[in-house]
Length: 183
Image 1: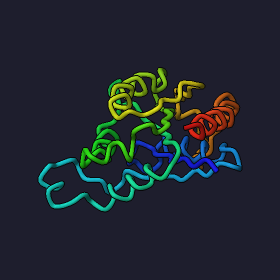
Image 2: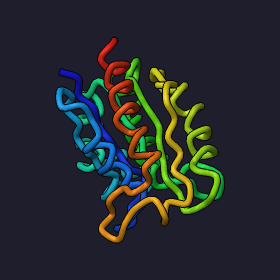
Image 3: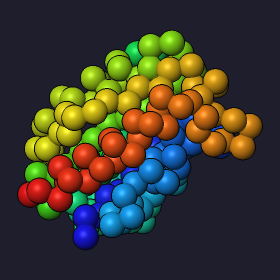
């Protein structure tokens, strides 16, 4: 069975990216195990903290990623780039550097995102590319999901209402799961 870890890059309660992650989980094929992970509780990277040991929240996330066939990064876009807190979490998951091959090398990674702006999360997703390349991941380059005007794409309960995105999500998740399952 293919296993995926899905990770939203926003800490905000009511985040559009948390809503999109939930919709992606619901759209995943039944024969694929998808586990939601969190960046909550991960401190800002500080070498002095690292000297005292890797924080528990980081250890948990690293092990979730290492055990999965693929990682879905659901990224907000802040100032035409990736959110600092999200990048910080991924940076922590490269510590110590000797763990990078075990956690990241050859790992299938897909990107999607939602933003209140009209441009979707194209710039944020593009900003992730050099990071994912240096980690040695296998980037899923099939379907792309950029949810623009996210305030209109979800209802008050956080359910996805945008019919176009609802139609794309199952195909995206199926294709990514197939890609992740091929090592």
